Length: 191
Picture (tube, rainbow, N blue to C red):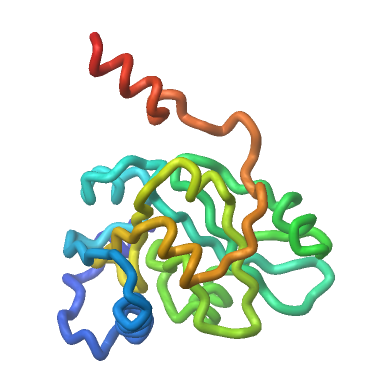
């Protein structure tokens, strides 16, 4: 990841970012409630949440998965504060043994560098699966939008309506950082 953070400042010509353009156009045409944030290039979930001014659990972390039985890939989307359970991804899709796709394949399929993959698919051969905790925990989700220096904050119900992901529990149990929960924030505020 360090290579991406140390990269030269991103170009501002939007035509150089087809995924960002397609995503912004899709959300606009669909009447979504969203906003675009410009920020320093960053792909790490916890760091970008702080830069955006959002909570880690609002982050929609998207990872391309491959399967032992071959065939099409899947884009798995989870809240930024949780960890993926690849066994659950495979089970949810009726597939055998899911693994994280190699970076070269992920870049070729998503047309994004690692850390910039949005929770949307623009390739009909890629299955989209999202953990329902992302929607249940947040009125809005936040994600890098096809580029490391732009994020979109999107109404959660609009995400489900437009992206139409398969909703399935695909996170590891017990991986929540207690300091990011609403109860912990309430206790901190009361202290």
